[in-house]
Every structure is written in structure tokens, then in C-alpha cells.
Amino acid sequence: MKPLIKTLLLPLLLFLLAWQLLSSIELVTDTYAALFLQTPYIIGVIGLVLAHQFNRSRTFATLLSLMVSYWAIQSFMQAALTLAVPLFAFTAVSIVLPLALLILLIAPERGLWNRFGLPLALIAPCCLCAAYLLFHFSANFYHPLAEYFVVKPMEGYVLSLGSSLLFLVVFLVGLVLAIKRPHDIEMALVFSLASIFIALAWLHKPFISTVMVSAAGLSLVIDVVRSSYSMAYRDDLTGLLGRRALNEKLRGLGKKYVIAMLDVDHFKKFNDTHGHDVGDDVLKMVAAQIAKVEGGGIPYRYGGEEFAVIFPRKALIKCLPQLESVRLGIEHYKIALRDKKNRPGDRKEGSRQRGKNPSPRTVSVTISIGVAERDEVLDQAEEVIKAADKALYQSKQKGRNCVSH
Image 1 (cartoon, rainbow, N blue to C red):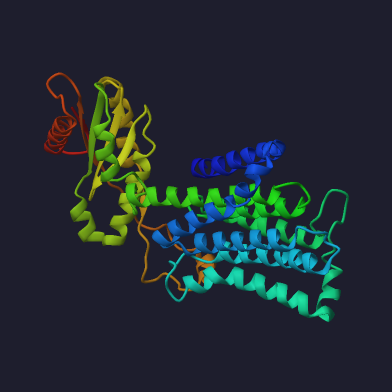
Image 2 (cartoon, helix red, strand yellow; image 1 turned 180 degrees about the vertical axis):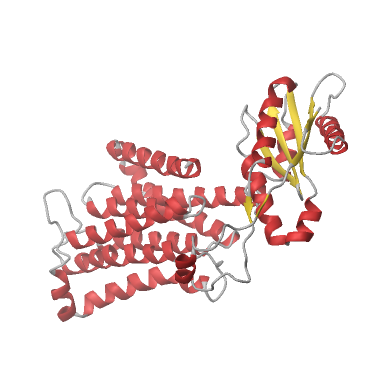
């Protein structure tokens, strides 16, 4: 639940800032209005460069879609929607954009410059242009369709009820996907959808498309930066902060802290016996248990089967109970061994057999922990780590599955 809350905070903050800006938009004078109208393009170009740099096709496609939609709003919709051209353009954007974002929500991330990513990046702009041309040149097709997408269905609300329903369905799908995958781009896509919905639904308000498209683009830019940070500083397998993040943390520690080194007992033998897949499951489980450490501890994957926990501004005596709790949690955790040979290939068949077979075999692992505290003798972080490693070796000599300091 915590990752979901973290991903929700930024879009909500951006939404509140955008809403506050809309309420005071009259402060934008004629001198700055022309520059302000270019803001979505500036943010979009920055985002496109970052998406290209980090090979993110869905981010690239969404930013391109937002920029094309904003261009269409500024170029064709600054007149009454009773006129043919503004109405054609508005209808095209209100139908195609949510459908394009639905595709981007469902599509997996496969990179940008390949046979999967490039068509995905261009699909929304091409569809928007095609839809506009279709509505513009095919009156026989447009008139029956227009009955379901009549604009201004109520006072002060521009978007048609058909498009509103479409936005709602895509929003709900995106919300479900964002809950399931809180670390991915889904929440930024959902926020982009909500932003363009507001821009279209209240199109008559001054600068609303500029503010909302800028906010959507900014959320995507921040998401790319956040994702790049995660790639650089988080371990792919366990999700914990990695060695690079640990080294940076060590440089900024104060004069009072505790470092614990944790190592999975007999991991090589376990790996050789049960295979690397089960070994990876063990590392994930151990990392998940270490991540629960309390007392202000910050967990890291140090390398291989070794982990580290830093307790800033803590005394050693205060940290020992927290580490003992982690050790006990890992000791009592049972890992089910999956029978891959007899496992059915069909998911439905697997669901029918679930519960009929006897309980699977389980295994458990233990960890050894060494702890050291910074003091006048151990003045440098490297010295504290060496002392914690020495204490870890003592735990191994004592028979493993214990805490030494």
C-alpha cells in the first residue's frame, strides 16, 4: 500500500497546484501570455528527450499525444464549436486520446527504438490526424456519430456524454492497473488522462488546456526521473536500495550511527540443491523481511546473499532488538517448493487442481548478523563496516543464525 500512496502524492500535488494556478490565471498579463502558451511544448520536448535517453516508449508516446492534442486545441478549437472545423477537431481528440491512453496503459514497456516501441509511440498522433481527417471529409459518417458525441450537454460543461463515459471507463481501468503496478508509469498515465479530461470538459475557461497539459507533461517528466533513479539505485531482484545508494549514504552519515551486515547462511549449498530460481525466491523473501526492520533502519542489498542495514542517529543497544526481530522473522518463514515437472501448463487447469494436491514441501533459511557502532575508535564508515563484517564472522563461528556485535 505504501508504494501506491507514494505514487499518488505527486499527481495530487500537481493537480492542486494546477487548480490553484487556474484560480489566479488572470494574473497572467498579455506580455507573458504568449510565452505561457508555449509551456506545454517546452515541458514536452524535455520529456521526449528524457524518454529517448531512458528508452521509454510509453512515456514518449504519451508526451507526443499530449503535444499533438494541445496543438489541435490551440490551432483549431479557439473558436465556437458550432463551426465545423473546431467541432471536428474537438470530437477527434475527445474520442481518440482516451483510446490511445488505454492502449498505452495495457501495452507492456518494450523500449522505444524497436519494432514494438516506435509504432506505439506514433499510434496516438497518427490516429488523431486520421480521425480529424475522417470527420472533416466524411459528412455521412460524422452525422450519425455526432448523435452520441454532442458537445455542451449541460451548462458550463463542454465534453459530450459519450466521451465523458469513455474517459471514465479508461480512468477506472488505469486506476486498477496503477494499484496492481504502483512502481510503473500507470499513475502518471492516469493523471494525464484526468488532466486532458478537465481541459476538454471545461475548454471555455482561459488557459485551462495550457495549465492541465503542462501539469500532465510535468508528471511524466518526473516519473521518468524517478524511474531512472530507481534503475540506478535499486536492486532489480529484491527491490532494495543497492550498493551505489549505500555508498552515497555512507558519505553523508553523522557522528552517531550503527551498521549491521546480514548474510544468508549456507546459501551456496541451498542454491546448488534447489536451483537458482528457488535461490532468487529466497533472496526476495529475505529482502522483504529485512525491509520490515523498525527503529529507523535503512536496508540495502550489499551484494550476492549479503545485506546491510544502517541506523542513522541510533545507539547499538537500541538496534539489537530490531535486528533480532528480523532474524526470527526469516527463521520462521516457510518457502514452498514448486513442483515444476507436474505443474499444469494451463492456468484454468491449475486453478482446478489447486487445493486437491497435498501441501507442497517447504524449506526455510536463516541469517547471521554482525553489528558495529561508530565511536571514537571506529571513526570512518569503512571502519564500521569492517567491524560489522568481523562481528558477522563471529556469528558464523558461533553456529550461525544469531546476532553478534
